[in-house]
Structures are given as structure tokens and as C-alpha cells.
Length: 294
Image 1 (cartoon, rainbow, N blue to C red):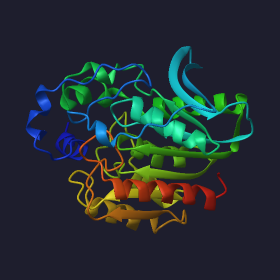
Image 2 (image 1 turned 30 degrees about the horizontal axis):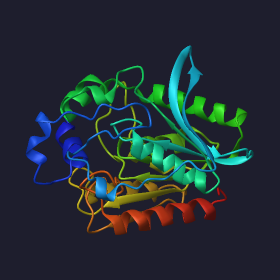
Image 3 (image 1 turned 90 degrees about the vertical axis):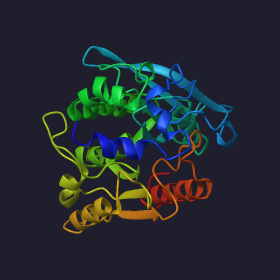
Image 4 (image 1 turned 60 degrees about the vertical axis):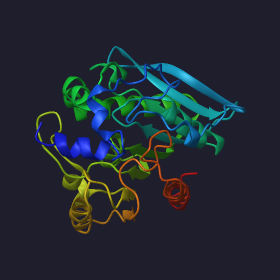
């Protein structure tokens, strides 16, 4: 894959263990209960743990084109007419960090849904290295399939206590790219936040467009949260995206954290930067509220 090196550099934080990535194995996880390991060892001392007290939270399955798509859902117990937030994972799938983020949103009154968007192609936890994961799963996932599965999540939310007139989406890394694309795909989306998602890249049959391509016609205000030291998603890429956005009127904005690299919000990884992650979270919540989704 022509962009594999850039993707690899952005996904793996530079640590003393970076040279061992091909020999690591992912932690074996079940949906929403364990951590996928982007970089071992998991930095347990920084992991944020959000309980489910007062919430209805856990794994479910929804139907899409005859297939059961696993999701992790969190929402305030017994409440309806809730704003809906779609939480889109990294390439490592819906593991405990992503599940925890849904619970953080639910504690604030959202119906939060994190779908397993790799279910047709394979289990991300089954591969021993990022290149293997890309080759066997991620490179085979069509954008059209992803858009359809997220559409199914929105339909499910509408029937299960969600107010899809207050619909938002946020995603991380691979999910950050999807966030940009879905904000363009679904006119129901009111606002979005993309955490260090790819902006430019290869176009092919499965990924016919990149965020930079949809930027001029984008209608949804997207908040982009990026690291100034990200070696895969560079500041040149951010500049290209800003230039493309300037041709439209989405009123999207970027926040670049100069001291952070990629995955600075991933509290289970050495790439985590607490101050920037907390600032980004506050900005996302304020961004959603300012655009009528809270």
C-alpha cells in the first residue's frame, strides 16, 4: 500500500518500544471489555475509567443488509429524546477505550453508539502487527459499506430513544477520517469532531474520496483536533485541508496541539498527552453545544 508508511508512522507513537511493533500481539478482547494494544505495554496508570452507574450500557447487535453488526451503546437509564453521538473507532476496533468514551458521553445525556465497522472483514485483535492488520482487514473495508453501517446505527438510534434531529459524530484516527466523510454523507448530521483523522491519501475503488475532496462542498461544521508532531498526518496535510475548506462555507475549524503527536487522546497508549486530551474534550463538548447538539 503506497500510504502504509505514513499510516504506520501516525498510528504508532515513538517510544522506546517502537522497534518491537512487528513482534507484538494485540490483546485479545471482546467488544467493549478489553484494550486493543497499539503500543505495548498498555499505560494503565493513565487509563480513564467511566462507570455505568445510571446508564444503560453494553454490547448489542443491529441489522444491516441481513448482517448483524455489533455496537457498543451507552445512554442515560430510562430517558428518551436524547441527542445522538456516533463514536467511530481507530483501526483497532471497539475496545474498552472506545466503550469508555461512549459512557463519558452518556453521563452528559447523550445516546452514544460505537459500531464495529470491521465485522465483515475480520477481527482487528487477531493480528500481530499493524501492517498485517492493514493488509488483511483495513485495506478491504469499503467506504460505502462504512457509510451504510453508520446509517443503520442512526436508524436504530431513532427507534431507541435517540433524537436524530440532534445528531453528531466523532472519531479517532481511522475514525477521524470517517467522521469527515460521514459529515458530508448524511445531511442529518448537525456538527462533528474529528480527532487526528487522515485528510489526504490514496483514492481507489474502496476509498474513492478523501476528506480534502469533500471539503469544498461540506455543509457541516467539523472541529479538527490534530497534533503538531504527528508524523503521518502532517501540518502540510492540515494546510491542504484548510485551503480546501476555504472554498466552501462549512465553518469548520482546526485546533493543532504543538506538543502532541498522533493519538494524543488515547489514554491507554504512551502517545497520550493529558493536558491536550482534556482540552480537546472540553472543546468538543463546547463545539457540540454551540451548534445545538447537547
